[in-house]
Length: 59
Image (cartoon, helix red, strand yellow):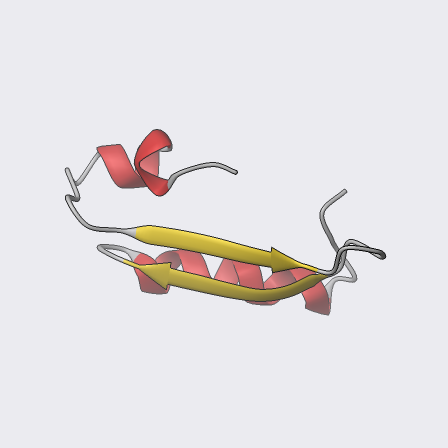
């Protein structure tokens, strides 16, 4: 798990309230969903949407 505040996207704007949640299938490690709340969420969510489109996953 990595908290949004630990990455530069969370630190630079000084967000006080934020969340990035990635849901993965336990067995095949596919990305099932992405949730983003906070400043710049719209900039982050497209990355999560691209992963399944490119057949990516947790690995």
